[in-house]
Image (cartoon, one colour):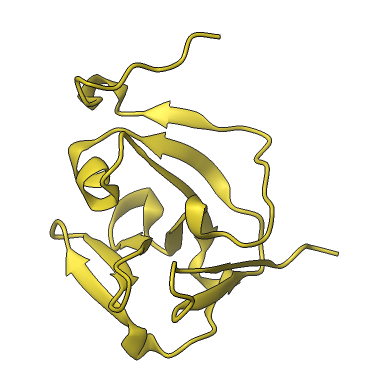
Length: 128
């Protein structure tokens, strides 16, 4: 049986569940993700839109179109970045979930850092 993953924003006004394990787990260093999260990078995992359910009222979400094809959604109360969707290309039909909002423990089998050439100048990746 597939595990159901639940998540929420900081104030818990927005709650959601994933009926599939997040795929394509990545830590994005692009400037849009850094600014959207206020952090060195943003960690996301993707599920098909059909495996995503919003458990709270959609009116608790606000959206920002960061480009012609990308819609980013966040809680209108606490400002937590939650999801983004792309309407074009390979990502169409998928929703990317901010992994820091998951309430169910999740350890991906694979993950990667992307757009590292755009990393914040003040960020130094830890040496292993």
